[in-house]
Length: 462
Image 1 (cartoon, rainbow, N blue to C red):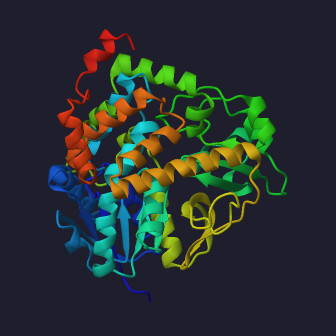
Image 2 (cartoon, rainbow, N blue to C red; image 1 turned 60 degrees about the horizontal axis):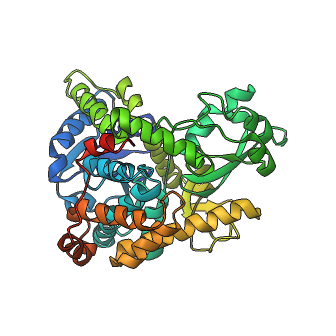
C-alpha cells in the first residue's frame, strides 16, 4: 500500500480551491490524501478561513477522513509535503486592476497575461515563487511543484531553468477547454480523437486526428469562428482568418486573437473598459458573491456559481497530473515542461507547452517536429519576450524590463511604452523590491500612477 499524501496549496484562499477539493475527492481511491494545507497571506486571511471551512465540509460529506488545515505560515504547510500546488496572485485582484487599467488609459491592451499587464504579473510573481522554491529545498526536497499561477509558462521556466527545481510541471486550462468543446462540433467524442499541442503557454497551436488516424484539423478550422468553440470566457471572439489558418493547417488557441486580430481586440477591450471598467473589477464582484455563497454552513460541494469565475478545469487538471505522477500512469496531458528538442526551433532548456506523457518521472514531451516559418517566427519572438521578462524580474534591470516591453507585440512602442512601464512600476512599488532604486528615481521625476483615475479615460475619449 502506498503511503498517504500530504498536499500544500499556496494561494489556498482562492475561489478556485473548491474545484481543487472536488478533483481530489473524485480521485481519492487513487490518491489517498491524509491532509491538505491551504496557505495564504494576511490580506487573504478572511477568504482563507471561508474556503478552508467549505473544503472541510466537502470532505466531511464523504467517507474519507481527510483533514484540511489553514495557515498563514507557508513553512508550516510545506514540511514533508508530497505535492505543492500554486495558485496565488501577488497583489490580489487590485494588482490585476492596475495591470489592465494603466495600459488602457494609454490606449493599449490591458490584459492579465498578455501585453504589459502579463509582464508585470510575472515581475511580481517570480520573486515570490523563488522564495517558495527555496523553502521547498529545505522542507520538502522530494516534492513535486504543480504550478497554475499565471503567467504559467513564464513562472514554470523560472522555477525549472533558473531556480533548479526540476520536479515542476506547469498547467493551464486552455488546452483542456479546446478538448472539451471541439469534438462535438464534428460529431465526435473526445475518446475518438487524438490531440497534439505545441507552443508556449497562451500561445500554442494544435492539430487533431480521428480514431483511424485521419487528420480532422481542417474540419475544425471551418468551425472556429462559431460560438462555444472552446475560447476562454474572458476573450472576445474576434474572427480568425480562415485562409490564414487553413494555410497553416493548425488550430490556434483563443489567446492568438490578441496577435492575429490585434486592432479588433484592442478596440473591443477599450470599449469594454469605457463601459464597465476592467475585467478584474468585474471579477471582484463575482468573487465577492462567490464567497457569500461559500459562507453557507450547509454548503458541502462545489457550487455551480464557480463556473462564472472563469478558469474552469484548472484545478481538475492539477489533480489528474498529481495522480498521473503518484500512480505512474503514463497518460497524455498538455503541460508546460522542458522542451528537450520536441520543438527544434527553441532551446532544449526552454519551457514549452506541449502534449506530454505524465508518469512518475514527470513530463516527457512528445516531439512535434519542425515549425514552419510563420509559427517559428512567432514562437521565437514570444520566447524572447518571456526570457527578457524573467531576466528583468530577477535582476531589477530597468533596461531589460524595457527590452521585454519593446519585444512584446502588444505593447505600443516609443515614448508611450516607456510611460506605461514607468507608471506600472510606481503603481506596483509595494510588490517590486527588485526595482526599488529605479522606482525611487521615477518618483523623484514626478511619475505618478493613473491606476485610480478612470475618469481620465472618459475625458480623453478612449
